[in-house]
Image (tube, rainbow, N blue to C red; front, top):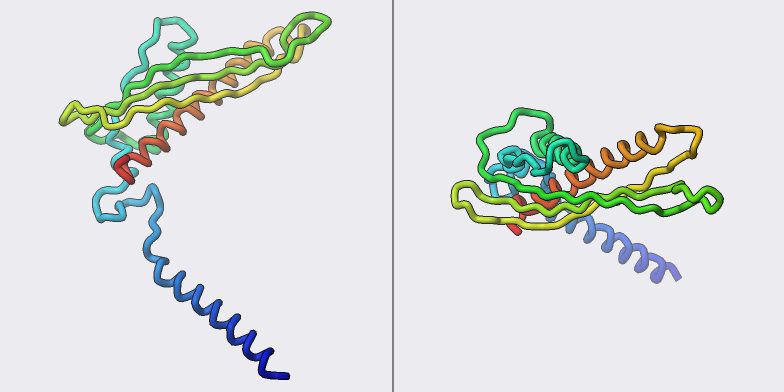
Length: 188
């Protein structure tokens, strides 16, 4: 009777030891995405992102798109450089934005919107400066909702819209930064 119990224990111990051996052999293969060196020994993703020059986003002065362009560009520069000084650029990034607003919920008695969605659609292209070749193109979007409390709070709608624009701008910047990091790590 004792033999089947010991066989099961030995098999379980063997499986655990096998899993540990596999984990030890692959433990050195992983490296943080934003590490100081790449897996192949070259410069890391953080230094490659730091060398991206973000072009000013074109929009007519004084328009909401101009304000969004400044917000997205500032957030993206911070995402790429980490708040530090930029180095000599090796790539330039061009971004085009288009904002979208949609009423989601409307009060049936007054006809006023209670919840709106603000969104940004962005297209971008990364160009290598040395060869003037486009290496990455892409599209991204962000949608955020905000509440409009009612007639008594006159400036709540404007402030809600401004906060939604800021959140959407940060999401767009983060999405573009992650795509560029993927390109510099994998080359795709």
